[in-house]
Image (cartoon, rainbow, N blue to C red; front, side, top):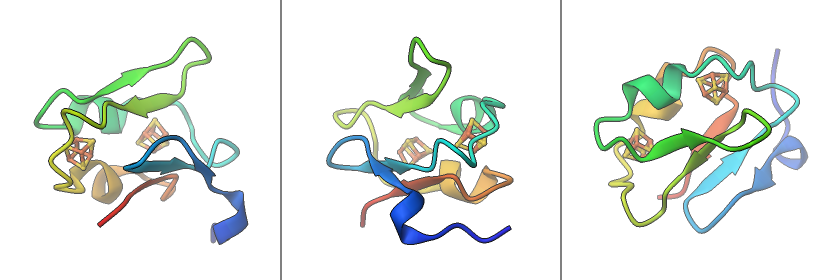
Length: 71
Ligand code: SF4
Ligand code: SF4
């Protein structure tokens, strides 16, 4: 599966998410060294832009490339 740019929704200044691709598995939530990701009420991972250090651990661990972090 290859995600297209238009499939990503900008969540905030640091995060974009492909909600159709996201498995809501929580791997990114568990892997973030800063504890910066939490689930929203719909079960999607949301990055706290104040806490994120842009290490991209979440991007690398996601099995479906659903999450993107800005440079
Ligand atoms: S880039 Fe790093 S600090 Fe930011 S949300 Fe992802 S894992 Fe957490
Ligand atoms: S690791 Fe990927 S598929 Fe799993 S919850 Fe995070 S963004 Fe969604």
